[in-house]
Amino acid sequence: MRLRPARPEDASSLAALSIEVWLGTYLRHGINGFFADYVFAELTPHRMAEHLARDTESFIVSQNAEGIDGFIRISDGVKPPAGPGSAVEIATLYVQPRHQGRGLGQALLQAGLKHCADLGAARPWLTTNSENTPAIGFYQRMGFEITGRTHFHVQDEAYPNEVLTYRP
Image 1 (cartoon, helix red, strand yellow):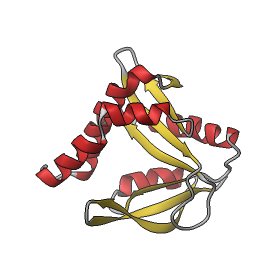
Image 2 (cartoon, rainbow, N blue to C red; image 1 turned 135 degrees about the vertical axis):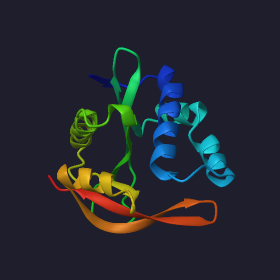
Image 3 (cartoon, one colour; image 1 turned 120 degrees about the vertical axis):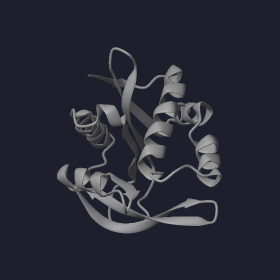
Image 4 (tube, rainbow, N blue to C red; image 1 turned 90 degrees about the vertical axis):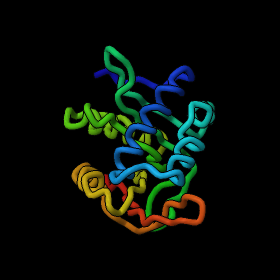
């Protein structure tokens, strides 16, 4: 495992990894047009390139011999929707399912927390789907606590998300 900052040419790999993890995590009973349309609109190489180009966005990727198997995305200047926390969000932490359980998520999160500290954000925050108990448990083991609730919106639908804040 090698961690490195993401580069513009990583946009398509980041999009493909995002689609794989998002679909596998949230659509366990089949894919319908509603969510397929969301994925193809939001998790695209173009959108990833836009994020990579922003000064307020930072990506750290896990690179293996074949390619990227995980990444963390940090957004500066985003206040938590509920509860306390710094104005720095851990917007995404994705690891390919076949590479989970090897410490990649922990290594990416530790690198991301160091980056947050370098930004002066001692208490970064994140959200995760309220039904994603494995992710909630992982973040709690890594020093996060549930500090509120918000909703993830796709068109007119809203899905409950827990807000978790790091407690150093």
